[in-house]
Image 1: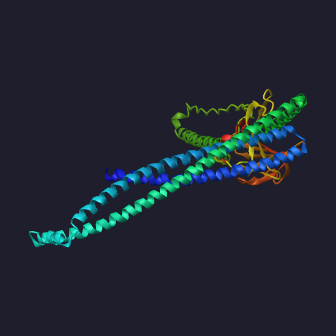
Image 2: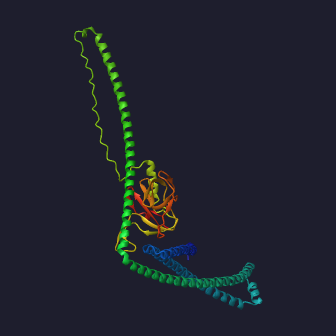
Length: 470
């Protein structure tokens, strides 16, 4: 094998060996986090079941639990696959070491046999004395010494390879045990998942008695959400119109100042031209008067006509847009920075799960009922605070029924944080990323839910692709 190829294979193999434990560690950390979330969800679920106030909330929590368990199963399967790859690698190493050890032992046995045949001192002495020259005798003596050293080295290498082989056998045995444990763990979680799904189906069936009442309640809440979206839309349009009006006024003032400057420059140029013409006419009149022969036929001097400029008809002001904001250079910088962070924005809560995604979708319980969500509905823990996803300015604090919402402007982007109780900011405040804005409300059923929306001008966009991966 060429040396360069051997080095490349060695580097690739080393990288693989180093990467495996690192990946396993990450998966273990991920599993521990999911298991912690499942435990917290289970505690919350039991609390809600005891209160028996909202069966829909119980289903919400069970949905979350099912998703977490599915995530746990997927993570364990990744671990199992990674372990299988590692085991396969170790089996190849064992085969390679076994082959190397076999060759070493065969070589060593042959060496011992040769050594046995030439074991007598007389034969060794004769081997040296039969040399044709002193140099050959010296070389033969050196060869015998090297041969002896090589035998010792071969023995040590066989011992080292044997230990390495035993270590790999032990490691493989442990890995097989770990793999069996992971498979058993996964089977247990799959059984548990099936139980959760059956329990959820039973609750859904029990809900069918009150289906009309609950659907009416869901529709009512949906109408309330639409009213909030309408208010947000109105405020954004107002902000856009105001920003565009100011921009138009600033532009008009700039144009007016430029026109006035040009008019002054023109008036001065006209004045200087008239004065020059008057001087030239006066000089001509003087020259004519001095000549006597011209007195009989005086020269008629024509005065220049004064042209009066037509009055400029003022242009009608263009209608101010309420759908697209005209940004200042500072506003454009903020907007560009926000856009550049797509996919890297922090979550509006430090810990939570998406209960309802963006857009038109079937209700998580009543699949025949279609609902529209203008943002992300995120469930979190009691006492959790909503936090800004990016630096910006508080544009508005809206009071909605028993809760409040905070709107933050980021150039021509707006983020809205709904269902807040206490508020930590006021209109006009400058905020930074991850700064707490207020505490999220927890309803009578023990559900803590934040609705987070993102608008580009007046258009609602899906916030999920903008947020960082957890």
